[in-house]
Image (cartoon, rainbow, N blue to C red; front, top):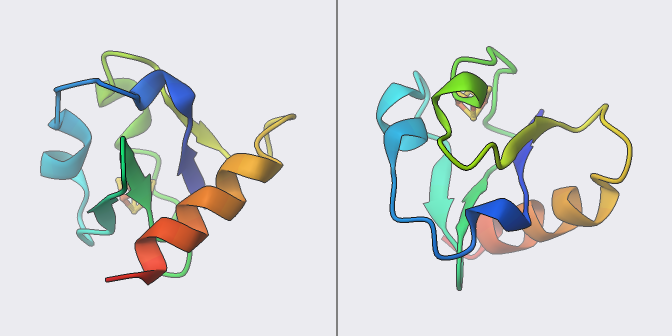
Length: 76
Ligand code: SF4
């Protein structure tokens, strides 16, 4: 899965949301999040993010972001 990280905070762009083929972006408290169980790992959103906030969860240091993405996307 891909995860949204802190560079998204206060970002006003939603380019990622528009390109996602499965609509798995959700609005968290201060940032967008990806629902890990819905993300199909297509990678389309990553280059669309102007803040470079979207990373694959295979990247080092993304564990806590995966947790937050899971948490905030589950409330919907
Ligand atoms: Fe959506 Fe693909 Fe990005 Fe996952 S990797 S959030 S499916 S655009």
